[in-house]
Length: 186
Image (cartoon, rainbow, N blue to C red):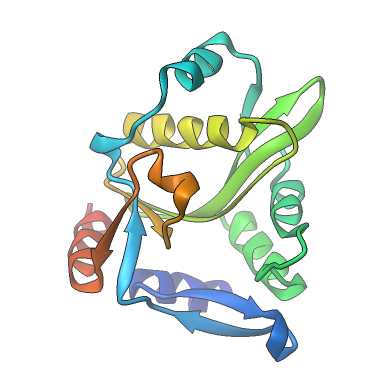
């Protein structure tokens, strides 16, 4: 298991951990040459998704069920979220650094994401959904929270087609480190 101080220090240096299933779930540190971010001023939401968000179809919660969220994110065939990762981030949650942004419907957790907040940076870790658009609504909820609280950087680590639709960009590690430094100082 990773100690909270080790995790926080690594994030502040631009690293993040992942367990590798092929290596007996040993945890390795990553700092990619290209980094995925979602610039908050360029965050894009389709009209249909914005309407769904505004209709309050899902109940939105922060840290309603952190452990349930991280376990749901891990519940897939191929995952880097090992039991040690879950224990490590649960400790960060207990200390007030890890957060889950969740979508609920009819009393059930149906989507969400989790990550780490340090300074004015949110380091997104993983998302899940059990109902259509539930994770997307959680992402909108996160970005709204970040804007209301003057966050400067949403780190997605890598980008994929899912994140591209929201305006995700890939930037050089050098550019990332400058944004990270500024957001950590704020």
